[in-house]
Amino acid sequence: MSTSPSSHIAGGAGGLVHLLPAKGIPMLDITTQAVATTAFIHFKGLDGNLLFNDGKPVGVRLFSPGTDEYAEVEERGQERLRKNMADNDDKYVQPSREQREADLADDLASVTAEFVNFTYPPAEGKFGKDLYRAFYLDRKLGHLKTQANKALGDWGKFAPVPSED
Image (cartoon, rainbow, N blue to C red; front, side):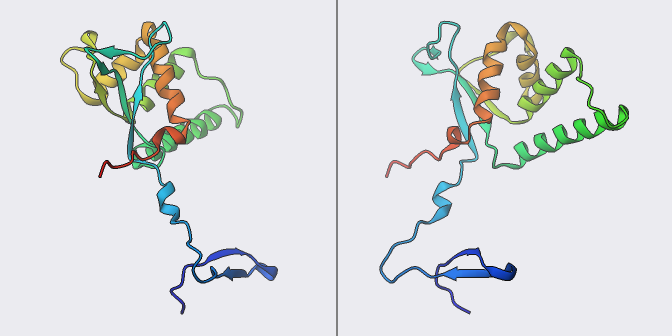
């Protein structure tokens, strides 16, 4: 059994063809393309400018699409879809606006690792997912919820930050 790096492509009759790199040609370590566990999402204010508090960036740190937290949210979404169809003779019925907002707030709360440089006073005394859910349910701050949700769909937002050696 060879331990040389190789790539595989589909071959005839369902087999694989192993392509060995030519000697001396470096191969890309594909793990360099792995996403980070979390990423900071810098919020923009209503004026379109990045938000800062005393010179520090304001936003949320979200778990990436490559994490268990994100996978659990995806599974919940699939389960909601299955239940919706099972409850409606295999036809999809649009949930109410309130239900969609609650589901999105739950999902975002589950993938929020922390708030960065801001507080949410209406949820004073709440922590973790309860705090995050309350924030994401606040319709007057919906533009921030939209930014967080949009970031989750962009794997590039979760590129690893190069270490400063």
